[in-house]
Image (cartoon, rainbow, N blue to C red):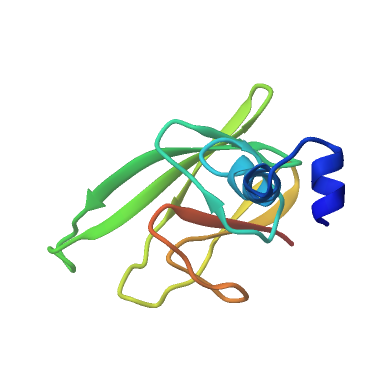
Amino acid sequence: MKTLLSHFGCTRRHFLTLGMATFAMPACAAGKGGSASYGTKVKFSKGSPITFPDFELKYVGTRKVSSSTYPRGFLYHDFEVSRSSASKTVSWSSGTGDIGPAIFQFDGKEFWLELSRSDKLGKLADNEVVIWKK
């Protein structure tokens, strides 16, 4: 290996830096905007669009909704799903604590949006979302 590195004029440090960059870049590519695949953890931030094969997803923010039956209210996370001129808002909430996906239809297809916890991928960070195409 030393012969190979010296042949190309690389030091061991150059080789390690290049190797780390090669593996780190794809992991960051889908985070906070960019393209994403279904069934993967994707980082999101407010206003940054994430492109999935069937639509673009953008995090709008949170809102609290109270009612007479539950005055403490529920915290909703709102996402905008769009493609061309069609768009819709998808809202997710943990509600009373039963964590499950927000199921929505878009362009005649069914999708699941998971926050906080994914049935297949486990715990999600506060800024991670998983979209499943059903």
